[in-house]
Amino acid sequence: MLLLIRLKTLLKTFVSFINNLPRKHFFALILLFVFLLVISFIPSQELSKKTIKRQLVLPAAVVTPDDYAMAEPISAVKEEYGKVFPDFSGNREVQIEIKAGDTLSGIFQKEGLSAALLQELLEVDKQYLRLGNLLPEQQVKLLINPENKLLALKVVIDLANTLTFTLKDGEYVSLLETKKGEWRNSLFQGSITGSFYINAKQSGLSAGQIQQISGALHEKFDFNRQLRPGDTFHALVSKQYIDGQYSFDSEVLAVLIKTRRQNYTAFLHEDGRYYAQDGLGLNKAYRRSPLNRKYRISSRFNPRRLHPVTKKIRPHNGTDFATPTGTKVYSVGDGLVVRAGYHPAAGNYIVIKHGRKYTTRFLHLSKIYVRKGQRIKMGHLIGKTGNTGRSTGPHLHYEFHVYNRPVNAMKVSLPLSKEVPKKQKKVFDKRRDLFLKEMGQESI
Image (cartoon, rainbow, N blue to C red; front, top):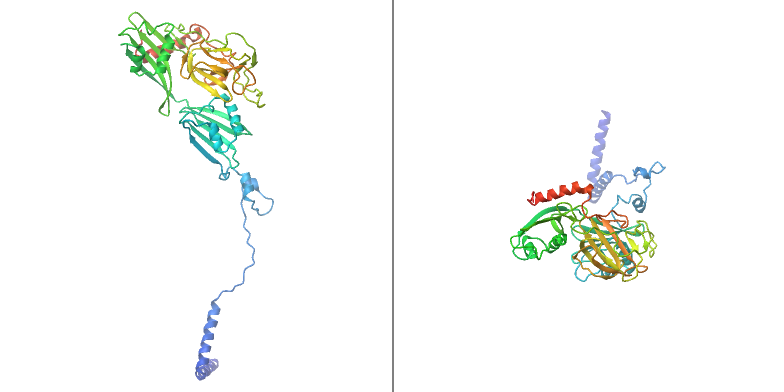
């Protein structure tokens, strides 16, 4: 009670003091009060010196011995886990559609790639013989690193074939990717009113298919003299389609020509030869060698041969015959010339397709006597031996391929008989009957 009375007395004294202050002193006191009030609300500026430790979790393969992981430079992590990071190499891609007059050497020169590199690729290309003659509308793609080194070269040859050269362990490795596609059978038939060629063209057969038909039967039938108005022909043709598009690769499977006097037939067997309905051969069998006499073999078929010029391990996919320049070279069987030209490494060369199964190749020729698209018979003179391209001396390089894979031409099993072998007769009869059924001619 006494304390309360004292507080009231002090308050009256303070108020009296304030009231007696000069006006300017009164306002100064009010400003001081406001300043102190504002200061009281400002937080302390003292910084905390407490250390914050944060654990960094790295992949299990990079665990440090300390309690806490230490971050590594980005380059070190990239080297350890290169596959996880995006490509920082800066490689550039070049894509070109070949036009008339374009050459690979011109493309390389434009991109700053050396002529020595081109020669190296052409040597590797001897396995496929595709780089020497690029054709309009073919696609070429190059992958080049920042140091202007070629990492990969891809050539889209056609709908079915793509050839790739890839740098691996300091050397270029080639790979030909071939789409199998889909083979569809089509029947063509018609009646003779004049020329067989004209009537066959009117039925839808191509010039190459007509030539294949006449080639299959030319030893048994004369198309110019034995056909009469009213005679009929029937042909079963298999065509290859890639992604729904016709690749222009076809094969005549069976032929039936009906005349007033006699029927003539030809059926394609698995060995690439044509036989009559009874299994007798219509054409001569294959021959072992493309030369008319024996010559010394200077280099045999060897998938692991040391190349005599480059001194690198390169497959030798053929047989080399040491012959004088100008020695005549003959076809070993009936077939179609699919390529004939010049390759910087292979020189003058010829590629002949004997049906769907067999292919033969002839390299380093001095002369070529056939042209692309020409159908030839066994024993046909196709060229003469020489020393063109990258070669150590006059010789013939001869290759034999089975389903596009090189084999030893001197040892491969060839159809040498004049009729279907007894072991294959049942297979032939089954194919023949199936073809006749597709032609609507189950009995002839």
